Image (cartoon, rainbow, N blue to C red; front, side):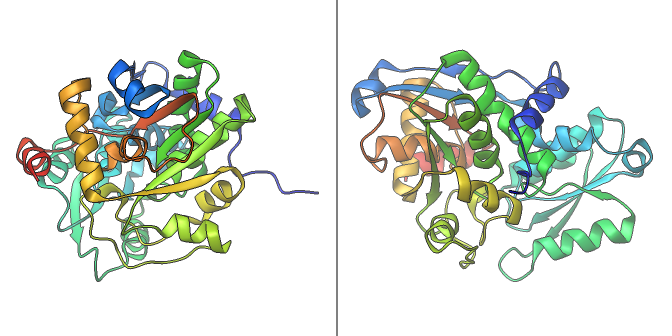
Length: 322
């Protein structure tokens, strides 16, 4: 008998009910200019309008809200390059508890400050020379906190899948869904949702060229580790896919596209000038893949998840001028 999947569509629907009235139901944008450019009807799910500015709030809240009351009262911990840090901090505040978050020393200052601003204690580490998973686990154990990882957790994955659920409820059937890939939680939840609703939909992930760990892993059939990528897409600067997320994505993801930093900049610029929205680099990679022709034979109706917009004015200006 086949093992039950770690995350089911019922889990995503339960998460949607849990998040109702807590998370924002973010808008879906269209652009005739973009449609003409890529030769498809494109629907953009704008998670840059989500609470804390990214989809991560969905998963962090869904996971924290299911902790036993006594465990929740003791506090929660997380490790993150930025958006999950803010999401965990806000989830803790919403649920009346405390949070301690491990973040890279070189995380964008805007993300460090926002995390602290939501009330979390921030502990920093060197992402290029230290193992954040081991550090985060030790931190949580030492302080007796419940650890909520950024992607490799069934409740986090189910929460992230609610973004795709909302998108498909609004658009109806799509031929493809294009999703940024870091640790794989967003695409795992999105694929679980989309394949349950529309079996024939194509799921396409997008990674930075220098951080192609998921593409390599899917090609070899096992998790591959690459050097921590140096890319403007800091939210996707990870060396290896998650264990749970990879098991899901190996079954459900159809292809991975790679984009350059320059293609990401072009997508950020287009989103700002033509869509009138601000996207951080990681939030723009799915759009970049479609605009740059990295998706073979673009389907007739395609959805994109614009995963976040957490970027300072100074950094945004530097990048789109680059």
